[in-house]
Image (cartoon, rainbow, N blue to C red; front, side):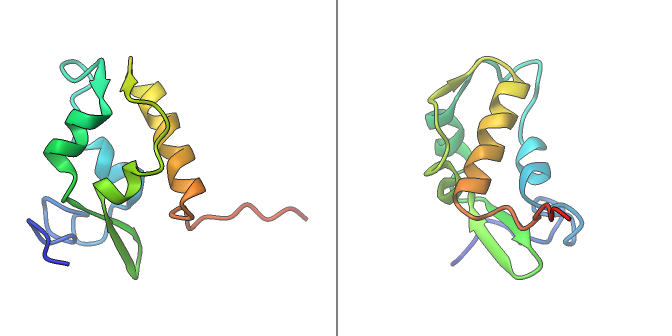
Length: 99
């Protein structure tokens, strides 16, 4: 896919130092962006790359296909919905192993 910027550059995952939630969170101004419309967020950032792990890059729009809800009142609500979406889409590479 042709990305509007390098997924590992300063606008993307900062040279592979930032992944998933962290990359998306940096696109939000907690003071000015809430309540946040999912449709408006995707319209602005949908084609931006999000590095999921060392070998997987998807678009914001790909992730938002799994986000439940169309408007979020605050950052914690948005962050939780995003986490559920990443896990349901199997874009969450971290697994908790029970002993």
